Length: 366
Image 1 (cartoon, rainbow, N blue to C red):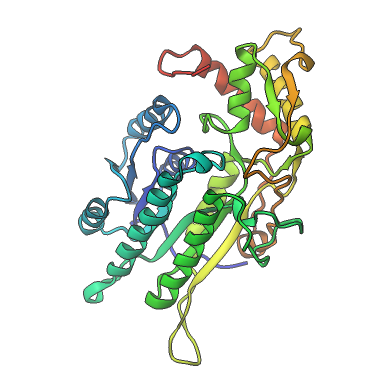
Image 2: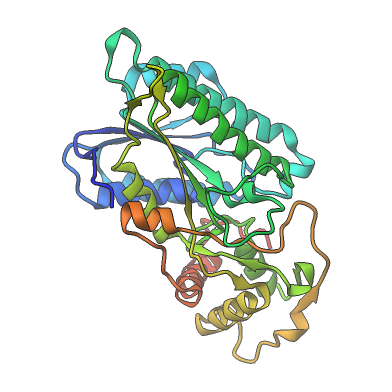
């Protein structure tokens, strides 16, 4: 197991996508751990890709924490904004979670992915590079969100970070693979310690409404049918949000070590890890558990007829039949493996969803 080579106490940490699902939960966890003199800078453009009220509710919760927290509404694709942020705050750890998410949306709205996932990430890399100018200590660790989508049409499971990922089946996946290649190049050229994290189907309370579990819940409450793709023959490695954040925190504390190769040039201080539950669930089983937990939480009536609200349909473009994380390197290096069961995770979501349905702060878009 790797030893921590970074302490988070006393650090200035930049979290992009801070109003997002993972970003907001990460910031909350950083403050909850009680690190001394920790300063967190968050940036988010608050796009309307999904209900912005959920994003503002997350930010409201962060504001209530009352610690050294600064939020900037801005777009990482705006070079001037990012340059000024780095100049003013000089972050020592950068966690880039800002991205245009969603596989299907990338088919109809490709511009958003190029802007945020390519140009935005390039701006982050450039500022990390220039953070070392004039002998400054600069960024000590760059972490960035990749995705299980990079595995594309790979047929070998579980997915290992040693596998080739040259067959993306969506532009979203292609941009995430591009992020890994760009980070590797910058790590090699400028000795930037960087770690990519391939997240597997993240879910939980106050999550993204475009994700299946959330969208299904909205439709079931409205009495509509839900479409189950590939006739229910999909399997997904669902990963609860707390497990994702735990993995990010552990990886943050160990930056890939800088070394010099035989050629006298830097060996890229670069790593990539899967963070997934390593237990893919059949989509039909997932839907059954979700419905049962929505009934238990009082969202759906006790006599709810599940069968009348399901429709089995073909696979959607850009989708893959299975996602399945090999987390052996994460376990070996950090002694951690996500373990929250789907039943427990969906129960917590369903209990939160009651509040979501009853709150005037949210627009449910049912």
